[in-house]
Image (tube, rainbow, N blue to C red; front, side, top):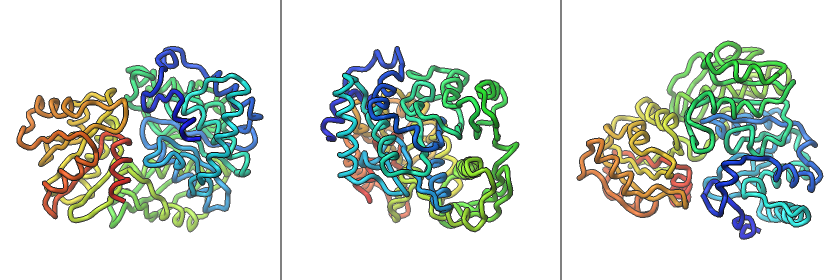
Length: 428
């Protein structure tokens, strides 16, 4: 079934034709597919998340909170790091191979019966919605693939809509302005729903307000972060939700921005339940949170850290986290980018000036930017040519980095989730 799945247009990898799908976005295909499956997405309540950064981490936190409260929670996130099964989970566990094959067969039969030509992502979205109905989830936590309005996941009628933030990314799909991107993301807000708004720019607020949410809870005004301190293995934070305060929460993730994600997740869970949560349950849930490929330490001596920063805002958050949480040491950047990314901007945001060495590689994707193009950008920025190495694969990049870094040094592998996923498969 995976071979059948891979034979469809895939916007993530660039496989197959599909420029017309970018120029003429539609949800007709996913709508037809779901109707042929019996509209499984209407059988359970849902929380729908979008935003430029932090969606997956926030979704994982929401799932931990709801599961800790006894709910049977399904989650749909993207993209995956190592296996497609990661995208569909129930009670924190990825879908088993047999279950994935079974639900993909159901989608394939619907595709054949309706003469629908769905994309890779549309198929997986339909499969997730069908599987959640089959296993009778109490709640589905659904992450947008791209944007909002035209995303296949927007077929779900979610009680809670979540906007983590808005920054410039995917301009080829969403446009070059934050206002345009906000308009697209605001499309997940259904009339009468509750909106948990993590974006704090007052100039963007009217875009979200006019969507007809019954209630809007806003970061800083209704929920947020008080104390946000570095701790051994993560952060010690104080959280405020619309219903109460939760002091002294340990969050085992790196990066100050993860506290904002935690505040959004906590407000989301509280809005879904309609009441404050028990403080001990909240503390236990956050202590269990993981976020693979997001500021993830996979080796020590030398320190090897993976981060799927794939846009300027994410790269800047990575750079800040490295400065705060990790000792000053010789740092080798291993960078692979997709061709939509501007390498000068990404390298500057990652802190190229502070790096001891740069190794560029090709991301394992048809959309990869050539590694020599990344290296050329570094040289144009004045980086020492003697400290730049170009290799073809992620595996070669890891080997070169390991040979060149001292035991007290650091290797940071970043630039694309495809690069991070490949590195994670080799290092964990």
